[in-house]
Image (tube, rainbow, N blue to C red; front, side, top):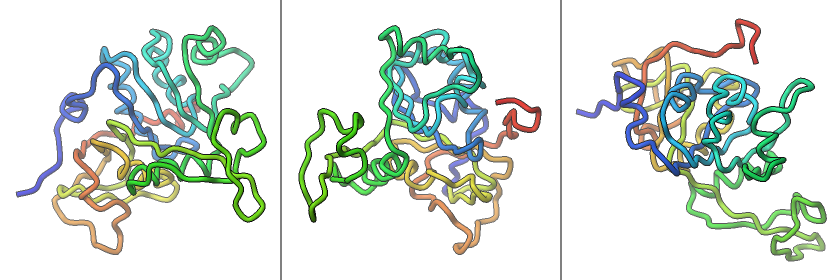
Length: 231
């Protein structure tokens, strides 16, 4: 009998360790897997690659991940911290310790989608003629210069959902979904945290991620600091 539910954060992150790459879902706080992020902070894993929309949610909620210099690379669409102070990850980038790869948001989403679809690379006009296109192969299509962008895949994808069933089918609430489906398809192991990992199957018309793309479902309360006026 298929049952992808796990009981603990440790079981959810089984196999996560040094050198891991992880896709972190979330946009504006929606769909951010704060419990799993905290568990990564409490682990000893180093030399991590984080692939996420905005770095500040990780730095604000689990600062030791960056303070302990456990991340070697970030791929993101927004790297600026909130407020006047320089964040740990910004200082590490300035010091040359941390690599930050900035990606236009549409290109970010498409690189992940391409990874899940088995498409190794594609050309896009976005970024052509800018610093973001420096060093990339350029071709002309229909009179437009386009840069070559490579697909993104990762060892793990983590996300927060409104509901998941024991088969791994997932339903998001509103904006929780953002990059979720693409990330689930592009990851070797997909982990979903939710308040509601039920026995009853999610109706097919309500499924946002089919269970074939999900490996583990963890029941955990939402640890988002938003209601407390946090990050």
